[in-house]
Length: 165
Image (cartoon, rainbow, N blue to C red; front, side, top):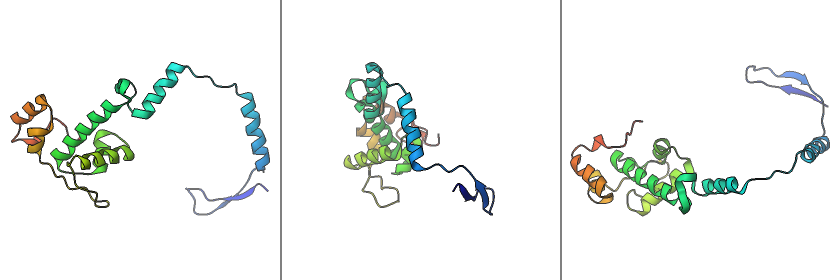
């Protein structure tokens, strides 16, 4: 007991090593001992509440009283502009450009599908983009965004969002 063969990453030949044998019961007893030595943790309500807000909305202070809904709306608009201007309906592109995880990028892509920006999923390939940059400039955004888009309507590659960064 305690003898083993170790195949390390730097060698193709296993090495015989010896260690002390510790039973599962001994491990449980040691873990229980350390649990008893640790004082009970207490949390400040103000700190615990802000952690809950950050976990629910992913935005922390940016979410305000709405639980992060404003943050999602901002990301959705950014994603819409990215997808339409690049004409690439890819979840992995959203992950890279918006710096979000796979699940959130997928949820954003599903919302874009519901709003008619992209087509349905076709396996691992990028989705078809159903909206043109002209439609985005004309009717998709707010007044300021529409005015900016109208001034640069012919030069859609010079969009305010850097697709290479």
